[in-house]
Image (cartoon, rainbow, N blue to C red; front, side):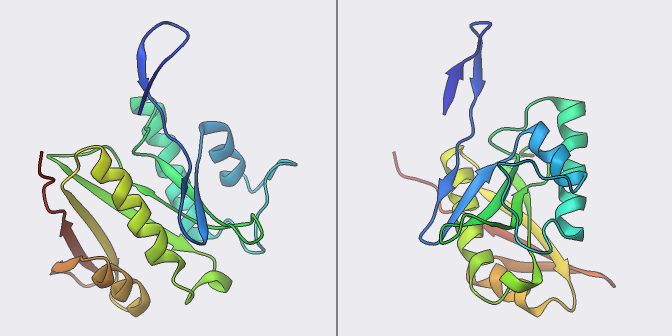
Amino acid sequence: MFAINSLGVFSRTMTDRETARLILRTVDTAQAQRIRDKAPSAEDRWAEGYPFEGDLAAIDGFLRATDQHGDQRPFGYYQITRKSDGVAVGGIGFVGPPDGGMVEIGYGLIPAARGQGYAGEALFALMAIADEHAIAGFRADTTCDNIASQRTLAHAGFEQVAADDELLHYEAHLVPRLA
């Protein structure tokens, strides 16, 4: 989606994405700084344990990329929020801009939100966003001992393409749309 900013220039916009049980909320720089600083404002609703270590690392990357390259939308960071109570339980996003039609993704949930299918639900929504912007492929990695994440990636169509001592590396490719 594109919009015209105050200077009359087209800019990419990023909107929230809803699934059956979740809302992927777009994160702007101000909110990212609050997450990084673990300093919620009155409008932030965070589950106990949010943000956790994985969120903080992702937010730091998002803020560095934004400082270096400007607005990351729609290839930015999204907060995973439960519809049932409006509370943030994790994050998902793109690790940098597209590269050769591929994007790297990352996600994580607080421990209390794991095992409920939220990661897979959020992952499918993120892949749909990428598909809408002509992205054909995805990269992701997970630690060798994170069986749940490995299953989530496999369920979403990812295949393991490499491994090293610490990580398993995955890729997935979308079927091209017919005109």
